[in-house]
Image 1 (tube, rainbow, N blue to C red):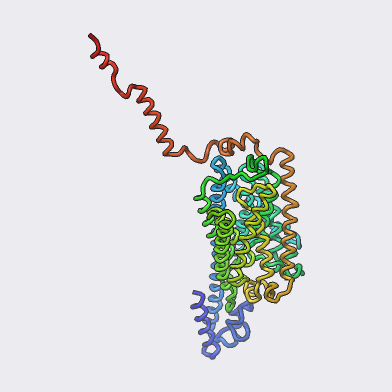
Image 2: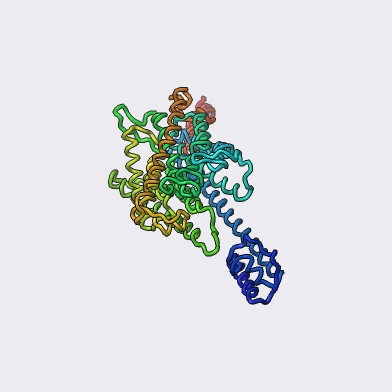
Length: 526
């Protein structure tokens, strides 16, 4: 539709410039772009000699812009729907990675991440992140969406909320199976209302102190480039999870008296696999959707190039992460470990999140491969430190989030940076010097410091108050029975049928196999 409309306008302008029609000066508006006229609205009005044609040109211009805005809003909303679907992926992955006795507990926490996270982000978080007025550190206006545009601003808010909910959900895996329900709700509200929004303001708002989109001030070294949230989403969630796991302590029995690791496998590899595939699918809304539009100005193909490059690099990094993890674990443990490969895929996805629109395909391959190594090494370090992270959320999101941010400073290519809206900058491997790498490094350090400085004391205060961890008795029984009214799974059907049949057989045997003793007794009587 857009292409055909532009061709019709061009034909009408050609007729006008040939002097075949007449018009009036006030038909066209000064804000109409120059491609509708030779030298802007004034010359166009002088050249056009039919008021009806000029009116049609103006109307077409309005319609084209309405279609463009509608398609862009739809693109953002659809991408947000895909990111929100990732909540289901996290829920399945988390449920499959814990023991059956805690299934209901982790599912409810994942559900409430969305509910509590929305209230927190709607009331406070969005204002801290993108509110006006603002300064380089934080926004402080637009509380509870007051005064925002019901069209594009609502779609932008919705998309940003799905990212905030993702950051909160990451932590659920790190503290699973032993954390108090009330403590978790408090953490979810605190992170989505304040911790996460401030970081997103720094990196993505036009006033942020390290934002590459800051045109009014002077962002540090030209600003950090984090296209879809290695630092903003994954590092915040990953390091918050690390703080939570360290403060709450390991699950009972996770390490024996000698300090050796005791395996505590989850109960469903099927749920883990399903969850990973859902997350992988959602990442196509997470990364390409961060372009926030699908149609740019006429002649500007940068948005299309950015979106398509994001899709391809995201897929390459995910595949590379999974295959590399498969080989590493095979060499280390001599098995083909399904769960490790699933986490390797997620490690590749996290690693490419910041750089997806600005790197070559081969670079995405390298980033995914290194991301798998970062994941495996980080997971081993956690166990050496006796930090129990049931879903390995920190190695995947925290460790790979750091690597993904730094990778931009090495592999970013200038033409792709320009197409993505980051200006004429490049990574160190492409002659860009060290400014971009330094900007992203400082951002990494700032995000780690900010997240840990707020989340660690928060969890510690809850621990001192006795509100952080459930009792040992409840932990051994399981949260589902002790807190949520019963087990998540009914008794196994086969076992139940066998048990019932066995009971009936015992009763039958006790009844003399159905034989009527009175008949026997009558026959024996003299």
